[in-house]
Length: 233
Image (cartoon, rainbow, N blue to C red; front, top):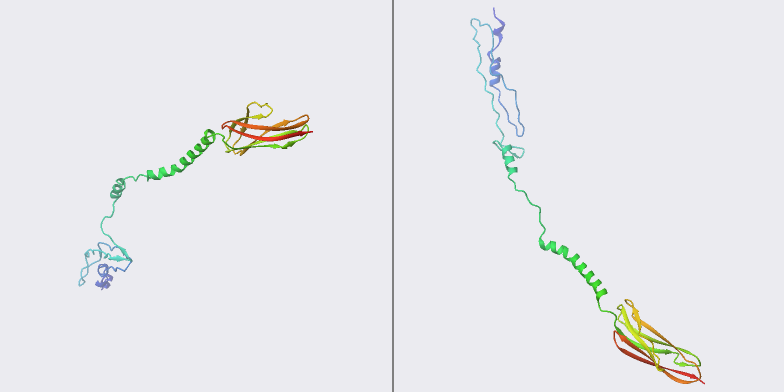
């Protein structure tokens, strides 16, 4: 009589199957298989004439071989950069100060506005405190030059200036022995000339040659004379 345990062949033992297993390493993939049991025990009733199957020797799992290169990535062995090293590296980095503009560039940037401001102040000071009016030329004419009975002559003096604002003084002197008081003329900025008028009226019969004189007193001294004729038969 044969027991059912005798039908198991020795080759079908789990220990034998695990012993024949080997790990295969591919080019870029790791293949992990489930770890085999450390011990395999077959429990049965020993019979006469049948080999005794006892505890099998534990099978040591095969460690897969690491590839030298995986898809162009270099494998490095060791603990790598630890958190302590990273913390120490970041803690010892010196603080980088912000870039400071060179003094020459800063001076050049403020030089132009300062120069413009100085020019404006100098121009205003020159306008207010600069030289006053100057008299260039003087001309005197009588209109009309020949007068009839009881006519009035308009004697005009044209004074050319330098365009500066200011005041100059003058007076009219007539050949009949009369004269005006000291008169003052105010000119404004960019006024190129000033026109001065003297009105002289003649009455009665006779023939008379008259002379009018324009005398500038300040800022320069100058005298200009014109003549006119009165004829009343």
